[in-house]
Amino acid sequence: MSNPVRLAVVGAGSRGTNYARLARKAGAVLTAVAEPDAERRRLFVEEFSLSPENVFTTWEDLVAAPKLSDAVVIATQDQEHTGPAVAFAYAGYDIILEKPIAPTEEEASRIVDAVESSGVIMAIGHVMRYSDYTRTLKDLLTSGSIGKIVSVEHLEPIGWWHFAHSYVRGNWRNAESSSSMLMAKSSHDLDWLSYIVDRPVKKVSSFGGLYWFKPENKPGEAAERCVDCPLQQTCAYSATKIYEGFLDDPVYRVWPLGVLTPKPSRESVSEALETGPYGECVYNGQNDVADHQVVNLEFEDGATASFTAVAFTQLDFRKTRIFGTDGSISGDGKHLEILDFATGTTRTIDTTPIGGASAADGHGGADGRLVEAFLRAVESRDGQALSSVRESFESHQLVWAAERSRHLGEVVTL
Image (cartoon, rainbow, N blue to C red):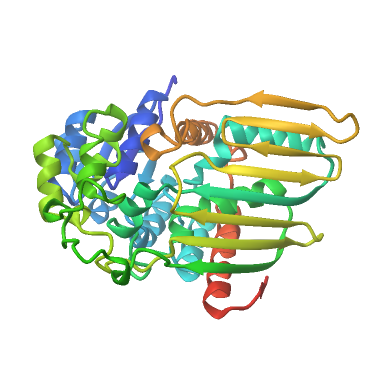
């Protein structure tokens, strides 16, 4: 870049730091950070060589300072998106906002209004749209390779230990303090389905809930913490077995171990398991979000889609089958298999990414593609390659409708 984009980060946790690394790799310059945790702030400053006067404890201090960057990454917790997103938009910063926009429709509307009235560029962290796999699939559908889409079957295999990490022990375990599992984890997927099918949704229904991670399913001999538990070597959800098993893996040291402790080591991980939430038994009753959920969509032309998110799987790429009038496509995040009804022939396109499906691997390269698209948009002042904040808001509305359906037991018409 002849004039590299200057970037600040609000929230120097796992996601904020990951976006910063990807932005620097793509040519941006990191100029400032706001992070309340002293150790995470120190590590970020050290890694990106920030000037002391550009280091802040709160986002309020950063936005009140003379403008230090062209753009900002906002990677605070879900409930803390609205304040900084609105303030930085009105201050003229272009923004990468980690998904979801906000947990509630009212808060998300405030952010959308701020972005649209200020004219800044905002990219929501719906990274699935930007992967090579998705772009190839979208091109196939747009070219009419399987005719008109009639139905879609889409699965998100969250992964048993990932769910325990994020949604039982972690920051997204409680809907009131964060958001629903569907919003926190699968707003990606409903946004992706909206993008792939590219038609307005007319009706939404949903079923699911918290099935397994409850006190009544706790084994009688289990302890409150895994470090004290006689079952820690045999339990599928044993924190000691899961996290200590990641210590020698450089990818998983970044995430999830980097969430437990800013600088993972055997000693710091052990301390986190002895004293912090990530060492608690999954059956203690500390969580209330769904561990399985089905969402059904009916589009305006009568086409349908079903989406399943489930904890009880291996962590893997999404699995999708798309059924069209002239053919079908089966995808697993790495390969696309296209069946042509007229000829009866099948062909396969390989889009295998570098790395796996987890956040530690940048979601198979999709994180990097989003950051690159955002930086190009900031440089060119053209956000057409990004999904608009209005599009993202509309896909969030599917999540809110699905949650209304799940709780009220009724079909929601949009």
